[in-house]
Length: 209
Ligand code: AR6
Image (cartoon, rainbow, N blue to C red; front, side, top):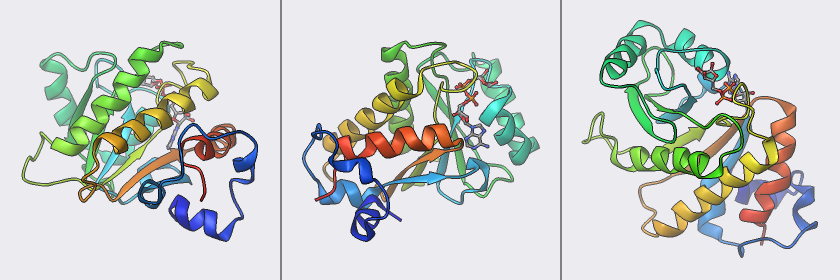
């Protein structure tokens, strides 16, 4: 369900009236943003975002899960990207999704520790790739699911990271007023701790009416 639907049923985001929102209610935004708690490798969307490292060759956490589920095809594309220099921190690259239900994986590299500009840059790079799809420029992407970049092994504190994710998404939506392309921006949380963070922070950026 989108935020708009969830706000209507009223059983989530009770924290919404606790603090004054940073931005006013925006129906279009709330129709496009949602929160889900899931294993990101199970989601059938246009693109999922991987929290990778600069080699793009796989690792632990969500990166490991994505590589395992996607199989050889994705691995080979990643090896190819690695030969071309991998991916710098704050940047992003795209591959097809291999055996994943998602069509594409946008691999980004978040900072180690709380370095706000680099995390912001990672989210922005994902949005840029999402709107252009350099892997297959003819195929416009409409839905994107973000994992909680840098909040695992890389140790970015959860609340500050949640603020960066939501603020960057809000800014991106604001700067792309011709929203015909984007259907869904989904934040995928895995652990309960991050679910709590997003339930607390979403109403500040995407408040209910
Ligand atoms: N689905 C969705 N989210 C997940 C999943 C999953 N299957 N598994 C873990 N998460 P992390 P980082 C969440 O450590 O901090 C790797 O080794 C997890 O709960 O995966 O950016 C890379 O190769 C956490 O909230 O990524 C890098 O070396 C979030 O994903 C390094 O870790 C990110 O945690 C990157 O560290």
